[in-house]
Length: 238
Image (cartoon, rainbow, N blue to C red; front, side):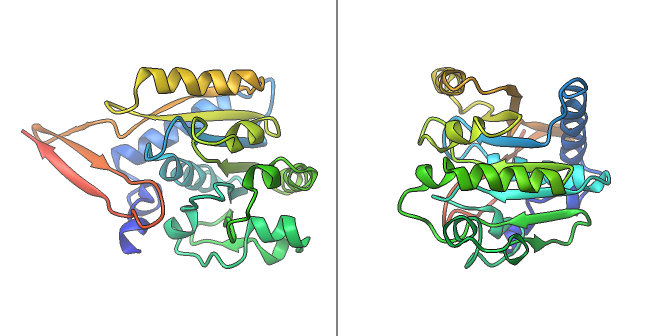
């Protein structure tokens, strides 16, 4: 679990190069919404293990640290990860709220970051796509958008299941995460096509796990997506 907490770079090492990159991403989002304010944004990836949950968690911390009220929602009901990143319990979350009509305040978690709240995924339902595409989900997003400055939603990879495409129809925009040196061009193109089919507003693409030059060598980081995969490694190339 400590390894996962260490992936919140913006919180743990705000002066790092990675943290600065998330501040740039935050600024780019602000400039992309001058004429069309963003309240609800989905972050997805083309395939698993591209680091989308790490990206959305750090983006949420960055926005909250700037003074905005942020709600981070784990809508990856099949392979949730945010509860691990923020060291939260996941016995009750989004799936309970939608299926059991729970009050919102019973599933919202505070975090160590001021202004940042998290709703974990909750138990895995038998029909995630149907749950996420329901009228209750739309009503939930409308409600929280009125309470927070920004609602960030972690969605499954768009090429794997229909969940991300469904969610993209309920929000103001989508950020696509791809991995440098790993994501195949065909996968990235297919992801864009899937989002285009539902007329999703693609705000941009985040190139993740970019090699970072330091001390004459190159360091790069490995992240793993999915239950049970929670190790981060750093390797120097000379």
